[in-house]
Image 1 (cartoon, helix red, strand yellow):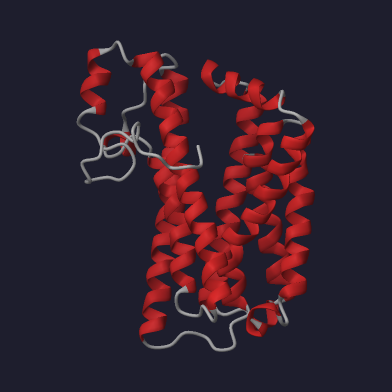
Image 2: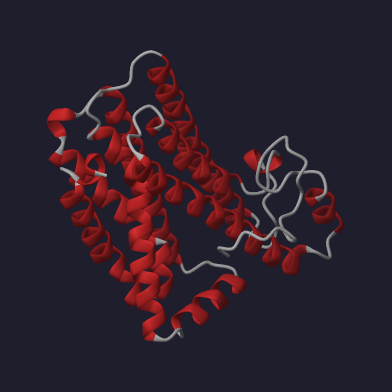
Amino acid sequence: MEQLFSPISPLILALIVLSLVIASVGFRKTVWFISVGYAFAITGMVIVTVLVYRDQLTLIAGLQNVALLLWSLRLGIYLVRREATAQMPTSVNDQVARAQSLPLMVKCFIWVSVSVLYVAMYSPALFMLTAPAQPTGLSAVIAWLGVIVLYGGLVIESVADQQKSAFKLQSPGKFCNVGLYRLVRCPNYLGEIMVWLGSWVIGLAIYNGILQWVISLIGLACITLIMMGSTKRLEKGQAQRYGHLPEYQQYITSVPVLFPFIPVYTLENVRVYIE
């Protein structure tokens, strides 16, 4: 336990406070707790942690944090621009309206819980920076595998968002089935899962103690379930808009919903707990 909480416990608490401050934008618009606040909370944690441990920055830790910084800035800027254009499906606007009407205590619970979650998600990068010894041998191979998955997820999510935005500008009333969307129906969610899975895999090389394992696993499990829940909501919304189209029925029965090359075409009946 001492290995986890000394000397980095003050920084963990500081990161929670930082995450709370940044995520508090959700009190302006509730959905921002889990969108704009999410992205820029990660940005803030990367910057602060790297500044504090800049003298201990190794190549792997540097690549891990650079990827998370690029991912969070890209997502944050994308979300801000999307908010500015106000071009969102009616179903999304309905969800935003329902969230906005939540009681203050519920909003406070969301604010605190997601802020702590963001720190848990970022924790593998923190543990890598503060590890007493850097990975060698097989551990180094595992860490580099994590780097590959992390950057692969960053590329997939970025390309998927760009492809969908470009498609919707040209064909606003149609479902996106071009580019990566020919391989999987939710490549942006797949990319996000890969980002956090890759970061967690990097940490496999240095996790030290049960608490580090628990904290990092909670972060990975929660974001994976959240992405699966987002996939279910997107399925439902698209079924309402395009379900009557024969070409859409052909699409959803031939293209996997979340994981490419795995013949799982719907999560409708899958209980993911965080939806």
